[in-house]
Length: 207
Image (tube, rainbow, N blue to C red; front, top):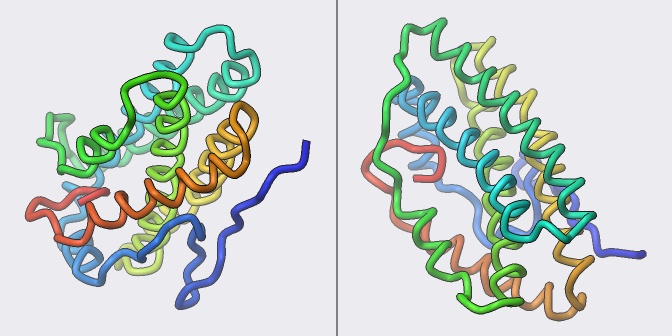
């Protein structure tokens, strides 16, 4: 089956996924670089949640064979990244601890329509947009982080974030009509960017 591909495009020399409507602000970069330990801790939470999201899809839609196969791989990789980030936390003597979430996730969840099959489509696209934004922000951290080894670590994760976005997009394109998918992606991408217009006061990957 032929499907539309979203490729990383160069914006100010930084590769980003062109499904995103607006780039991350300089204010977020400044906030993140000034609070790298908190960003690392939040990154740990993000990887754990991403694995959980993939598993939740499999519990909710267990008969979708292609989806189950693809998201099994993603869940495994997200847990591997969770472990890698936790190793960085240990190196920096940062204990695992809860963090209050920014409004980003709840705002995207509120945009998901409650009834099937709309819920399935919206959930796939929202998850893909989160992966796309994570790809962009890890790239910003890799570019601006003053610690060379940590910057290299962020750089090493970018390809998988882009690939995960692609997987969720292809799944949406597999189960739904292309025009419907593209229209809804555009609508949700506007919501996603609007949620990031005002910088959250607490540093987070998606603040």
